[in-house]
Amino acid sequence: MVQKLDELGFRINFKKSVLIPSKRIVFFGLIIDTELFKIFLTDEKIDKIISLGKVLLKQKFVTVRCLASFIGLVVHAFNAVSVGPLHYRNMERNKVEALNSCNGDFDSEIFITEESKTEFIWWVNNIKSENGKLIRPIQINFWIETDASLEVALTSAARAQSLSALDLHNISFSQRQGTIVFHIQELLKSTRPGISLPNVVFKRFDKPELCVVKTMIRMFCVQKM
Image (tube, rainbow, N blue to C red; front, side, top):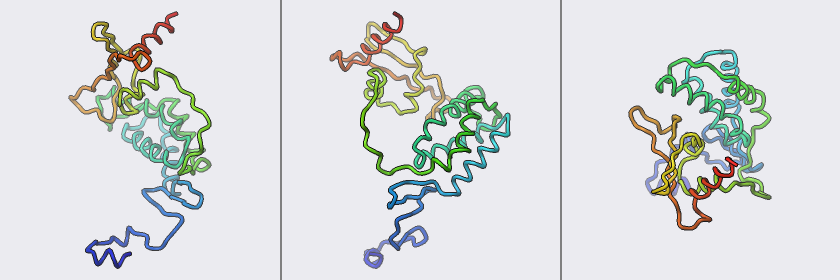
């Protein structure tokens, strides 16, 4: 194969290539194991998460950049830690609120909340035991879903970070146009200085069973009762 590619004019980077068949390969800090059919974090990545987590736990104030760096390591670890997404939202909220208060300055110092510290502790104590995620998820036996959230996700085409920022306290309803508008107040990854965040708009649909606006109005009415 190498000889054939060379004859065709392709230049092979031998330093980044694995020419001997292997059941375990390291790719972007992840170990792909085709025998166990799992993805693992490398020891280097695990040690980096633990060491930085311990540093953050000792501090009352850190820079937003330092917190964001730890969150970046954690998000990357989601590829190998199946329950990882359950233990980072408080850190993300801590970061977003800090950026809101300091006008997006990543070098400003912020106070670490107790909720964030709880998540630091989880990653420090559990990263080794939770390391290892199935490449092919196990078969799902049943689904649990809610009408409003599912329809909002399917019909808005918004990113997950935008959906998580939707707040029932920041909406407006136009009876004439038949629309519900969510006004996003949080900072997102796409936030830039001087550029306002786009609103998430839902319009009335002809089929009642598929209309997000009607479903949400019905939900509001039930909550008021």
